Structures are given as C-alpha cells and as structure tokens.
Picture (tube, rainbow, N blue to C red):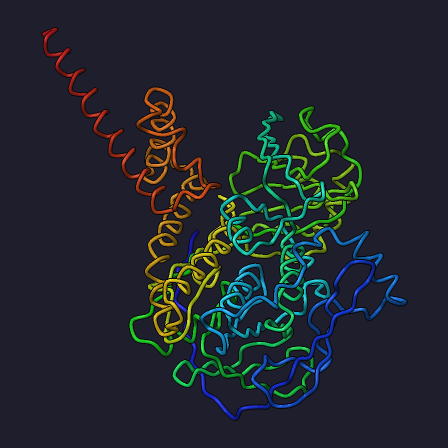
Length: 541
C-alpha cells in the first residue's frame, strides 16, 4: 500500500561565528604534485574548516612521503580525477559562498560545479564520512552509473575509474523457475553507494582543496531562508557547540527527509511536496563466498562487476547479488513492507529463500540467512515530487527534490544530471545569483516531474492488475508498439521505444510524451481494428 504525506518545519537563528583561513603548500614526490594543507583559526572570507579538518591529500597515517607516494602510485586508481584544478581562474560567482547540505553523490558533485563557477563551498552532512560510517556501510547498495549520470562527471573533467572491478559486465536475471536472462551493459560503471559517495568526496577535496570544505556529523538544526543562515549542530558529541553559517546560495542535497525542503515548506508560500512510499523494505548481506557457478557463460573468465537479480512469484520479494573485487558477493533481500515482521530466526530466512528463489547458490543460503536475521530493515526507496525546485537563494536537487524508487535505477543518475542542469543555470545567469534558482527550476522541473510519473506508472508492475491497470496498459502499449514501429519505420520512430533508452541522455519529458503518444496510437489502432471487425461481421449478415 502506498502512502502520501506532506512534510513541514520552521527555523530561527542566533549569532555568527568566526571562520578559518586555509593555507596550501605543494610537495613534489617523484614527478607527482600532491597538495597538502594546514589551517589557522582566524577570521577570513575563506570556507570554514572544523578543527582538525583537512582538505586535499593528507599524509597522516603514512610512515613518510615515500610510503604516501607509493600508495598514490599503486593503490589510487583515480590519479587524474584527484588532480587539483584550484589554480584555474575563478568563475563569475567568485567571492560568493554556497552551503550544500548533504555530502552524498549529488552534494559532492554540486559542490564541484559550484567551485568551478567561483563559489567558496561548504558541504555539511549529518552522518560521519562514509569510510567511517558503519551504518552507511550496512545499508550499502549497488549504484550503476549509466551515461545519463556519467555526463555530469564528464563535464567536470572527472575521469571515471578504469579499474576492471568497476566496469559493469551486465545484469543476470533469474526467475522463479530458474530461467536465466543475461543483459550486457558495457560502458556502465558500478559502485556501492558508500564507495561512490566517498570517491566523489575525495575527488572534490583534491580537485578544489582551496574552495570546498566538508563537515561531517553536522546536522541542519535551524534554517532561516530570509536571513540566509543555517545553524548546524554536531551529531558526534553532546557537548559540541552549534555553528551558525551564512550563505549566498543554499543547496539542499540532503535526501528524502530533507531539512532544507522542510524549511521551504514552512517558510515559503505555495511550496508543496508529495512523498510516496515504495511499499517495499530490504535488508543487506555482505561478502558471501563461493557461488562460482552463478556467473553465466557470457561472463566467465571476464573481469568486471556483475549484478544478479533473483525474482519470485511475488513481485515484492527479490534477492540481489553483486560481485565484489575480492570474489565475494553482497546484496539485498527485499519484501513487501511489514513482511520482515514474520521472520525471526536464520531458519525462517533460509526457508523463505529456498521456497521463493531458484538459482541462488546453496552455499550462500546459511550465511545470508544468518546476516539477514540480524540486520535491520530499511525502506526500499520513496518517491518525491515538489511543486518547485527552488526558494529564495535556495535550490533542491537529488532525493530532496525528486527521489524515485529503485525500479528503473534512475535515483543517483538523475541526481547527478540535476547537478549538470544546475551548472547550466549558473552559466545562463552570468553571475546574477538572484536569477539562478528560478532558472534552475525552469530548466529541470518538468523533467523531474516526468521522472516521478514514470516511476509511479512502474508501480503497476507490483500491483499486477494486468489489463485492468491503465498505467500498466500505457507502458505495455508503448513498449510493444514502439518495438514494432522501430523495426518497421526506424527512420520515423527511432531505434527503440523511448522507455528503453532511460540510460541515455533522452529527457524524461520526452520519454513520458512518447509513452502517452504510443498509448493513444494503440487505442486508435484498436478502435480501427474493432471497427473493421464489426464492419466485416455486419457484411456477413
């Protein structure tokens, strides 16, 4: 059952605090330029850095420069991505300050675009840094970056990792009868959510060490949109003081439960939000060994990441497994919301997996069941639609503005695409910061509303009402008729139905328009065929 509700909050402010000055120096190590940093707590116009914080590459924890250089040379797969571009000329927003709430993939990517445009950027996140966050690791799931999401990083000049373990081989679907279908997906790149977040944080720090600062375990406590100030409280210690931060532009990239969005609800007239639940929950298991026979012949002997999807006769019940670089497998087990309450012991989990799925390696089941029985259940995505993507000196992007369920794999990819659109809005506004929020909304709102509709229609796959479900019929008509027309008149229709090109740069608005068009065309053809049949029957009598 889907639920829908509205979220609201309000905010007020106290006093400002001094900021800190960042100093950088360069250290050359065997033909490599590594930027290291030190900080002094004095008042300045630079971005604030929490005590003990760091930017760029730190040598703490290594036994001298030689060991640090060896790490960068042998272990770091992203040397080009992590090279500093801080010394490039400032953009049209030089001297302005942006505060980004949320250090996930969208927040870090937005921070890099803002820094490139000249902003001094401070990024705050309520959680610890991903590499130090056991809770985040426990909720980790796979994100496959497709060309839609990759485009933002390409625009930034960030080279995706070339390590073979990040390369996507494809998806292997196993239905309840054991039938296997292989979908090759070359060109995509696979991350866990936590590893993608950490990689983008590291990339942002190292490319813009003098313009971007990260502050973790810092929750947005109060937001005053009129005064353009945020109060952040430390989540890591009860005695830690709050920090008041002023901004010129506020970016809410703070997820489905966004405090920035809640402030917009409470403090701006006419702002509305809808939040729908996916109706599913999931648990995570990690690092299962064995399962050599699970890979199809197409992937055997090849290096790269594979994703396995085991489905059942119940559309809500699924088991996923993705390959890890060390040869183990991690993944998720999902049920309809509330379903985990009926499972209590590892034996319960093993029994339901044996009953529901075909093809899961037998040696995985006991280990997976033990982990799942001890793991917490997490909601498997929500769907968010806001009436507009901006407020005074503020924009929303990513899950805060347009969260979707995992059904089409568009969450992170659409979030990175929104960062690219924000960059265009900044460029179009030519330094006029007041024009940026509305321009961003103008460029992006219709598209993310279309994504919401596509995701909502996809819920018909789970309702399974078949021909009695208009959403299901629309999608079915588009795919079937579109596949036919793409073969008969490809020069008019295109290479394939638009819905099957979600991974490309085709806009979501174009896809929803194609779904509506083809469903209407199917209805028209159906009426013509019915009329012809009736006419033929009448002639017989």
